[in-house]
Image 1 (cartoon, one colour):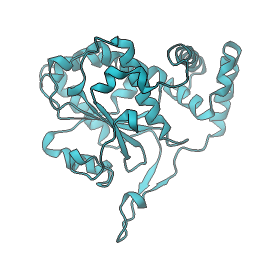
Image 2 (tube, helix red, strand yellow):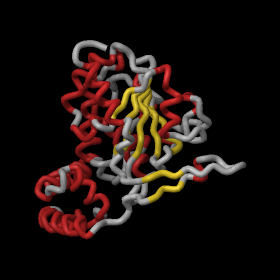
Image 3 (cartoon, one colour):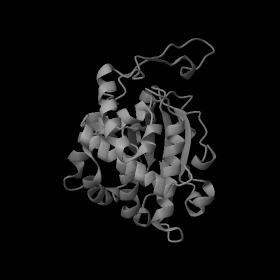
Image 4 (cartoon, helix red, strand yellow):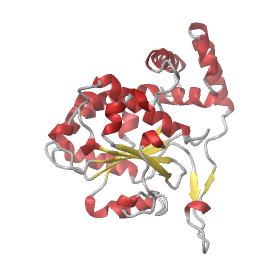
Length: 283
């Protein structure tokens, strides 16, 4: 690493050693003969109950937003709560964020979903997979940064549509109170041709502005020296809440580290586990 990047990476790693995930969940593993640990996972005290304080804030936000956008009536309370939390329970800021999201969704995803037929060039890269859950029941995606190339045929918009399809797939595997997902960002083989800053900044914007409080953790593995130059560009675009969820894993401790949060039966085969990977558009 170089310059000021090394302490930044260490800070991000340290923030994750306390297993802070914002779900207020506890995980209890009970292993019995003949059964996998995953089958025995019990999620306790998950955030699936909306408190009276939350209800009041949600009601206040709805009153503001519905006056300007009646379609917001279709947004459920858990989604409203995510927007509130993303803006530290500030109703005015959260309502502005939600209104912006609703307008964006109507414009960018007019059919309500992205079809694989809309992103043929991105699918061809075969760079994102979805399968398995971590020990908190959060779905896991694996993204191979070394397979991403600038989309010269479909342009930045097609890449953004790919991001929306992927995020929608991940969110569809969550449930109220267990609304977060985990991403393993694998940078093996990452080089100059993969350093597409505009695309990555676009993905960050969609994740942070349109899918607030969805990311549980981003685990970055096989990090090459070259990546830290790109990291300097991306870092200012990452909000503080997202920064706390990013950790970098050393190659020599890769499987050991991943197994702390992911059972072997759910860990992808390429990292020493038993779970095959499924392309995101087929999941």
